[in-house]
Amino acid sequence: MHLRSLGAALTVTGSAHLLDVRGGPLLVDCGMFQGSEALEARNHEPFPFDPADLRAVLLTHAHLDHIGRLPLLVRRGFRGPVYCTPPTAALAETVLLDSARLQVEGFRRELRRARRTGREDKVPAPLYDEEDVHRTLALLRPAFQFGETLKVGGLRVTPGRAGHILGSAYLLLEDGEARVILSGDLGNRESGLQLDFAPPPEADAVVLESTYADHRHRSLPETLAELRDTLRQSIRAGGKILIPSFAIERTQFLLAELKKLMDTGEVPRIPVFLDSPMASRATHAYFEFGDELVSPVREALRRGDDPFRPSTLHTVVSAEESRRLNRYDGPAIILAGNGMMTGGRIQHHLKHHLWEPSTSLIIVSYQSPDSLGGQLIAGAKTVRVLGEEIAVRAQIHTIGGFSAHADRDDLLAFLESAGQPRVWLVHGEPEVMEAFLPVLEARGLSANLVPDRERVDLLTTTFPEGRPPGMTGARGREQRSEE
Ligand SMILES: [Zn+2]
Image (cartoon, rainbow, N blue to C red; front, side, top):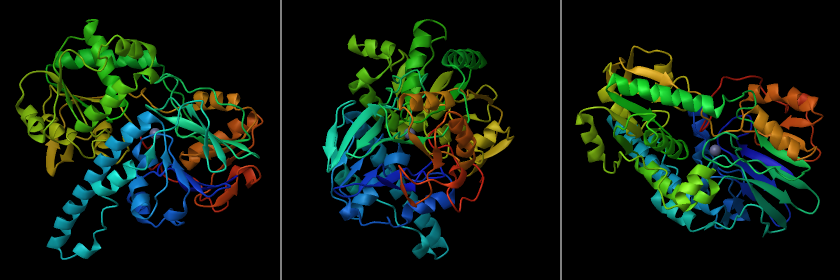
């Protein structure tokens, strides 16, 4: 079986893997590159194949860096089926419509700016719009069920629970000669919301994500205790508590945790505002597919309770309501996107509250060093938010233990269940993957890094010391995708 990675090879973003199999080429994931300008420029490059020739697309999960270029593929001629799990289909609608809106808004903003300098012809067109997304959603076939085999062309495809976000799957592909697993993104076995990944069957090769292959996550109980103590301290400070959060998974986890802490009296009840229409929409999918979640949440849903609704929750819908929150008096917790503070409604909350010493900013997800979040973590005294210089007098708290990704121990446990496969590393920073190679070798596993856009035979290709030719050694960290 031949693989050509068009994204997430030697980087953590833009997952898209082209498989040459009998019956025609397949694409596993079609993600957007996010992070540096150089990476994002790759979104505009042509696909190195005719999208009309693809037999099908298989999706592992609904994160933007795994599905974000799908509407572009459709815009450029793909008309085949897109297989995924039912929750992935539900989340994909939310994620792709939001992405189209951001594309179009970003384009209009750039165009206005460029007109003033007479360079409007230099502004790249949006990758796609809402109409492309609707044509894409019409191609979704939510036919993947964990553990059930589906025939796609000459290939048998069996999805397994990946435990990363709602609906996430790894894929076992069998063509009669080889059994290959594509891991997609694998979950942290202490995520607090998702069930653990299902142990995979034995395979000849595993294409393995390696985002945190150099890392051991802090334990969930320790992280939760830190969250509780930070909330108590922040509530005592009496001001706004701002929590920038990713719309999928982290927000639902925080809502469930806030409800628990307030119901048990461990944290005083104060108003909670969910100021993210995208997160509100995504939460519906968690409702609908609650059987996939850890038992306290699952049981609550079965009883007809709402585990994602603290009794003091207000869901903010319109932009006007969101702005009105700026004048809200008294303590409150505000959950808003986006998680990296690079855009979204969190920005105007930061602008209105960062300068107040009673404000607490609780950072619960990875921030790239040059982002606004990165500057705040580094202790910046002032930051630029929405074009204004804002003094930072708020208390900045970082809770680093949350992660939706497998750590080194999780990855090794996954591999152990797969027998003695050849291992191909993707979705990691080069230096993280290089450091992981000897760990795999010590376990008797033959391992290589997947080269960028070069075709490999998953069962026979080998690189000296596992490093593809032309690999330019360690580069700066660009971004750890969706943490
Ligand atoms: Zn992911």
